[in-house]
Amino acid sequence: MLYKSYLVEQNIASLDKNLCLFYGENLGLKNEFNKKVTHHNQNLEIIRLTQEDIVKNNVLYREIVNISLFEKNKVFLISQVNEKILEPIKEIESKIEDQKIYLFGDILDKKSKLRNYFEKSEKCGSVPCYADNEMSIKKIIMNRLRGFEGLSTYNVNLIVENTNLDRSILENEFNKIVTFFQNKKIETEKLEELLNVRINDNFNRLRDEALNGNKLRTNKLLSDTIIDDDKNIFYLSIINQRLNKLSEVVGESGNLEKSINELKPPIFWKEKIDFLKQAKKWNTSKIKTILKKTYNLEIVIKSNSMINKNILMKKLLVDICESANAS
Image 1 (cartoon, rainbow, N blue to C red):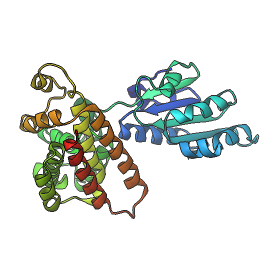
Image 2: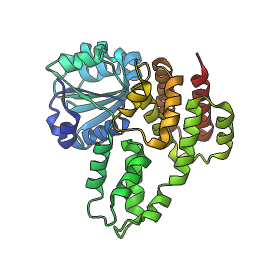
Image 3: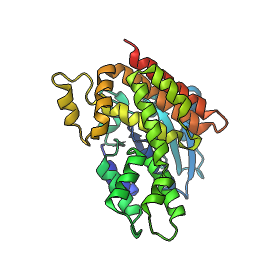
Image 4: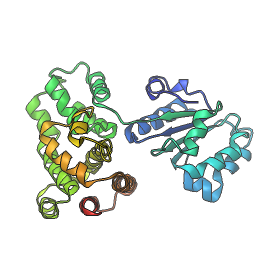
């Protein structure tokens, strides 16, 4: 059964199936659902697993079948799922009684057997988590910062651009804004400084030169640009947003410039020259390859605090530059 994400977001209890799948490119929204599910079931035993735990060790079957009378109401949160999880789910589906199982996966295309199974089954719930748009991000900002003075159109747009339409980054920016402006009076100059607008603009130039395949400019900017370790997830979002935008126009027959002009939300006029260059350099296959790399890098960064994030980010940008020039 298919559920609308915005309705589930308003009321997590409306998700009344014991088997539920959250999937899509909106990592921030999936993280929010994970937190909501956890909070909603806080009085129950919550078990967190990965798909690997289940496929290799058959953990889920043992947990469901070999359950004691005192442990019936368990909640399973399973991350990093894909097609491989479908058969184990089918195996235990008829044995589920009071337990609840929530699956969290990446992008699943329309041909996905896992996605189709959860969407068509009356016993399962499916919640697609598509990317946010400018309007939805603005709505979140207005709701979260209600009561703050100085929340002008310019300042709202400043926050929107800084988050690159990524909820994970937006949450981080909220924390900084609420902590800094404790008097609930937002001043534009201080907001720009707080959001590191200049540093972000520099990274945008680095991203564009890498996507343009300009090796000389990319190497120079890699040396000159400040890459803040605390903003690596934000940088990945900046790259992902541009790649996803490019995927909307690459391979389009007809007038490429016309297709770019019709994009919603629109490309800013100052970015159109670079965007057109990139659209001519990239294809669907290359975009998917780099999106996979950014997704894997995000997992590595979030799961290992000891790694050198700076080196990994620079390596990614070099890979992007090389991919741009590949045939």
